[in-house]
Length: 327
Image (cartoon, rainbow, N blue to C red; front, side):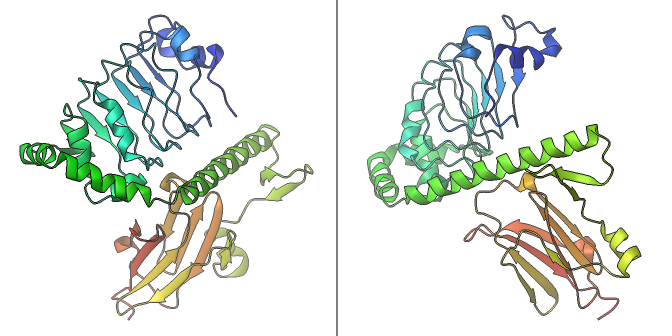
């Protein structure tokens, strides 16, 4: 667990010569921070822009002293409910992309944030509610942009006219949410991020010791060899090796004119952990440092491959067209 401390703030404010009292902007993303403590409010009361994305934060709290805060980025955290921003009267933009906000009714806590013009909630469970967009527009009248789309005048009128019916429907949908399932996904994301942090730290330590070829160090202090690159495998074995280090229950299907690779990698896992490399004879997908590598029975058109998340399962789905040169 990483805590927000005075030392961390001074290190991250080098652009301001380490001065905190008049600091306007600070970036604290990807530090595995689990909570927002009171340190920010003590030392950085003039903050206007605060980046806290890609951490492990579950609750929005201890920001009440940041009276001049204009932009708060909490994307890719573990937040389930919106709260703690009532005192931030100058807040103009709020980014909660890819969190776990299921309590859509909590958006009403932002009603008094009269300067809030832009908000992002894509990737949260609440966005699947039928009247999600109209409810948010009605709950936060000052909004001009929601999820990157400008609020239309017709939407604002409709949201006001149907306010009571929409809120009732949201209450009904929210009551059916499986909170236990969401908590399980939060725990999985926490574990994923901690594994990635441990992997990164072990790799850095190995590099510092100049242990050539060492990728990570296990609990016994024994080095594990780095996976060979496809080029090294071809040189050593004469072909790319099949591998499934993450033991994913993937499916590789052959359609009429393309392959479909379906990988169940976790519905709420950030795609920042995924790297996809499609070559004419194989595909290599690296997820949280673990490799899935598959050879094709026929050559493919790698330049026209596409990848997306399934809207129903959350799986990574890669479509790879066959090459027209070698049918």
